[in-house]
Image 1 (cartoon, each protein chain N blue to C red):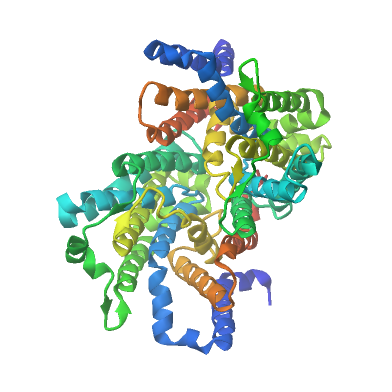
Image 2 (cartoon, one colour):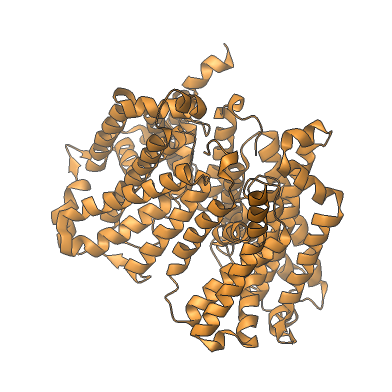
Length: 321
Length: 313
């Protein structure tokens, strides 16, 4: 019994300890790492990734997985850029309407994703992977391979206007992180995610409409991907069909490294935050201490394996596919 | 006619119907030289799909195939000058070992295969970027022709790629139908717990399946590098989706256990015909990905064995 408790405590706090250790490690190697300027840089890079990670956290807590984020982010980013331009191309005018429309579109894509997964009874990793391909395809179709620029000064203010050293987009991401936390802990929906993830049969037997919870979860994730898309466009000032590239690997890694168990039921948005910070501190730190950035994907790959291994109670499992 | 009895025949019926539709609209499509050309072009993709078949046959998935092929195009381009023909051995070994790594992580460390192969894909991508210096590489044309020129020529009008594909199909069919390994893979795919209970070393066979998948992805990468006379860390991107589609529309379901190598041959031809027909019907190339994504969903929904999935996660 004591072993189980210590194991759970360890798993709960290990990600945070890893994060602290990494910060100390990189600071020791190069003191400029520990500066407000550099932290702002990490925060800017982490903000969109955090939104994707929070979105997929809900899905992973349910014991499913969503691999559609690349397509969803690309499609919503491109759509946002087009709608924004159509509405006058300025936040000062009607342009702001593009933001709620984009979030709604993200929710719709997520909804579709969830319906394909639940109604056609296709495992979520494959349903979402396929839908992700469709999303990227749709983004290519919309842009014809071109880049859509968004250069409205008011909108780019998300990146350029700073408050206490951090750009506004960091605060936007922090706000939606709190929204995610609120949904997770203070709403029935949030509790239902954990019920489904903890044991789907049991949740079903207790009268929970598991289908609806799953579909809602995917729709919610879609909304968060759309927020990520808006933040990415604000950061780089353009949208194209590859805007979402790389988000899948990075966000799944972050969430898992942050301590959300792939089996469902364990972890939450704070784990996503710690995970995203770990991944981005490693990224940034490798550059700061002068390591080549091509190692990044490999390091993340090893990290995700390690994280899953550590978080898996092997006595509970007979086999995995 | 019972739908369940019709199911195993759906792939080839689909293929015949598709060929007929395109053939009626464009008689030029059915010219033997055109058909051979289309078949020859799809061979690198086919070899990757062949490898994926093994991973899917045991109920897993290999999402690293594309990164593996990318990495091999780089390895082949970098070491062709110093190693000559031996570079082929290096490439296949690299794919085999990384595949084994995926298999080891999946079976011994209990990481689901879609995560473990995604992670190993990340490692392969890093290796590719490191070796290539993040640039596109070119092979020395003369040396390529001397060493691997035989891969891409024509023999009696038949593209040599097709002959390579035929040899690989023969080997894979032999493994699947005439060896203990093949029977063991079928047992694992049909019911892993039962296979383990009857004394099969399930982990070893699963590791081997992933290794074969890696090795074939490597061969696909090598052939692709020879065709393009160069390599880059992202050059084969776009292979993964059609390769998975090829396996699934061929009739090997995501749940494993049925289907197999012969099905993937049919599945790849379906992909090839869909691709070619998009050209004939002047469907924009930018729509291909949407079409394949939707075909993938339909194919999974039709083939998946729901009796094996108590809850669909």
